[in-house]
Amino acid sequence: MQGYRITADQSEMNFDFVYDFISTSYWAKGIPRDTFDKSVSNSLCFGVLDANNQQVGFARIITDTATFAYLSDVFITENERGKGLSKLLVDFILNQPETQGLRRIMLGTADAHGLYQQFGFKPLQQPEMLMQIWQPDPYQN
Image (cartoon, rainbow, N blue to C red):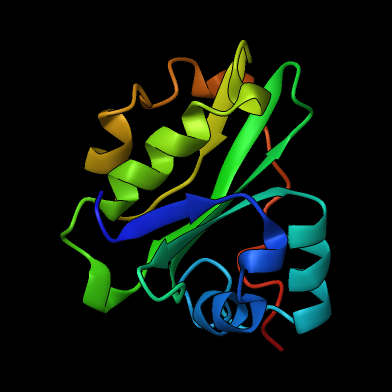
């Protein structure tokens, strides 16, 4: 997409900006900064930059690069939505060497099912096989 680019180079990313967005999101509201920093340092991160190299989007993938990955923290800023940037970002991530040949890629979303379905994501076929430890508000007091 002209005027935008995606980078996997963390030195080009504005993690203060990313933290400000994610720490107010529905999925990670109140996440402590040190927890956020640890999460990105242990993930493959992707930033969407505009023509002025300002960050307007982000995603990360947690993976062993052999069998499993979890796509997380995907966002595009409100002013940049509707331009196809989220599609560009997800496509970019799914075409990285680290995401090829994996047995399973998972994600959780409350509101973007249509986006992810375009890339082959489907509801769990056998949800009874999966279990979780779930702490819905781990960052809230």
